[in-house]
Length: 48
Image 1 (cartoon, rainbow, N blue to C red):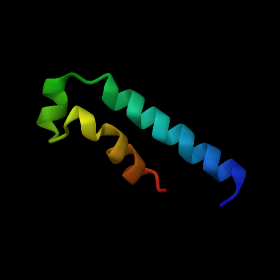
Image 2: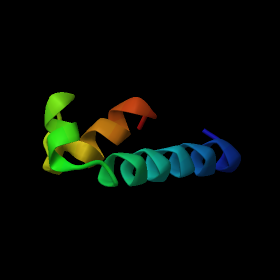
Image 3: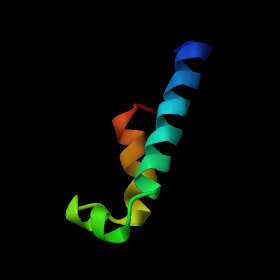
């Protein structure tokens, strides 16, 4: 994987973590997400 793609994936990961982190606990629960699961969900969404 090249540097540009890795950086782009990292940016998408950070954006996903940030957006989910801004949600209330109730909103996350409605989606079936626990706050502690946010990083794992973001990693799964944008590759490894």
